[in-house]
Figure 1 (cartoon, rainbow, N blue to C red):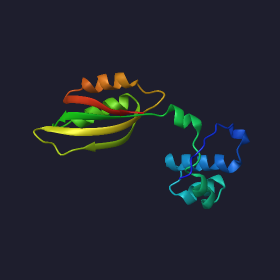
Figure 2 (figure 1 turned 180 degrees about the vertical axis):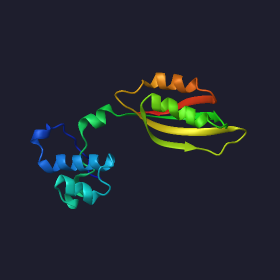
Figure 3 (figure 1 turned 45 degrees about the horizontal axis):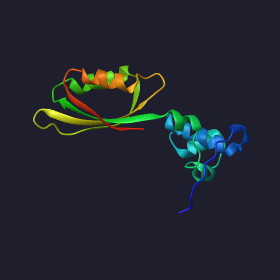
Figure 4 (figure 1 turned 60 degrees about the vertical axis):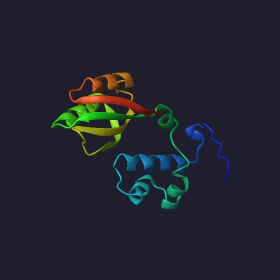
Length: 146
């Protein structure tokens, strides 16, 4: 396996195709393009260029500023508990990446969520405090932090 080497390079020094690939990826991620073909048509590059470079370029700020964490919560199985729990995350302005709820056993449901803390989100401690105080929350643990 070839060892990979990384460089921080000013955008102005890059061939235009790299910035077009980044733009195409953003269009797809934002839902402004529903297919790769649509994204490459909008950015003016070929599909082959997109696929050649898509895994090789990321904006540096995206890599540095992304804060993702995963929590495990045990919730009481009662109407409204999960929606109230999720409304706290909405109020905290986090981006939920994944959510999984188990089938309730003994009136408790296990929920695992991965979320991204954005620039205007509450900090992680505030989020955990808010979730812990919510009605119907039995316990919360942070499983991972990036």
